[in-house]
Image 1: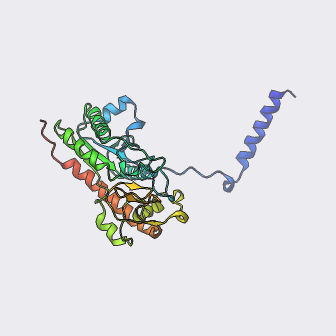
Image 2 (image 1 turned 135 degrees about the horizontal axis):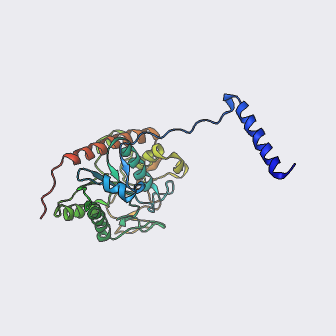
Image 3 (image 1 turned 135 degrees about the vertical axis):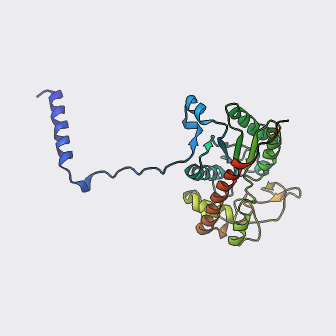
Length: 281
């Protein structure tokens, strides 16, 4: 028998065996992904983008640092992970167009810690302005920055003003206040805002594999200046990079915070749709 014939016979036998297999041994069907209401801009062709980018469209721009310290127990990509998670939740329930996530921005408070990066305020401001201007050329005039940072607000605020003068509406998440009332109900730490009880709890809910609670510590020295790894009278001391008490984090606290945040984000986007456009100056 030739090699070709032998291979053909073997394939035939394999097909026969497969058809005789019982239903219990069949491979399970792949899980289906949930139905989306929104669109990922990156997955469109330019022709499809031309159709999607209408004057009525709301464009969401997620912002989350992919290289910023979050203590010894959380990864540098922490904020990026949160932004990507919230982006997916918004996509499921809101008919928005989601632009690619911005993984660099204005984070001057963490530059003492290896791996942490920041843009200049002016660069971060202009990046938001340029992205909105670019997409507005094709129709959209309403933009929502799904913002996961605190210092980022200092760059986004002037961007709002610049774009408003051009008849473009930009709104952004204020991560410090959007679920402040909910956070107060679950918070036990005396204070903190970074890699702390609340943020660590969110990560235990969103991406528990990325959290190492064995390395979580309390590191809280009240102050409002950028963090420092060494004692410095001009900076807020944090040897760990934590500002708060990460040891108090739980998945349940994270669930409460994150689910409330998703609802508030959706409401802010819905409100943006109804907001009157600024007059062009």
